[in-house]
Image (cartoon, rainbow, N blue to C red; front, side, top):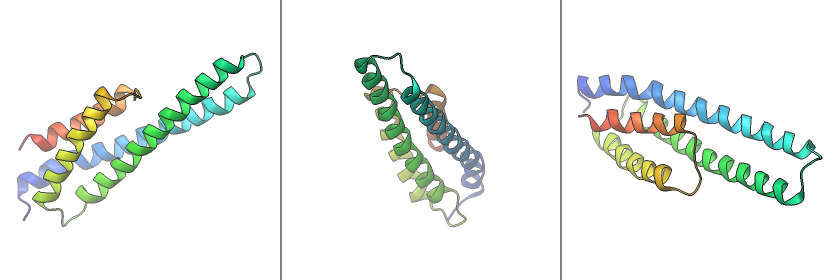
Length: 126
């Protein structure tokens, strides 16, 4: 059973999840455009091209993973019949995700990390 406090918390979390999703989608589009520009660039040596292309591909893959997580969290939390157990489950999954974002191999833009941190902080506040 959701309390008024839980609903108030979700009133802050759901818009942040939507904003995170939009930010991730925008970053993916910018990276794909960068990848297209890289393909048309003729003055790059093979090593530089491959290195740059691999870095962009890895970041797109990581952002796609985060997009899926964000959409999953939104589908769990932003529905009328969300339970306390759902909120706790998402909070724990977010903590693991934040560890990966902080210590992971692929460096995600700080704006996106901050959305996930803020959501985790709000869920942890009660």
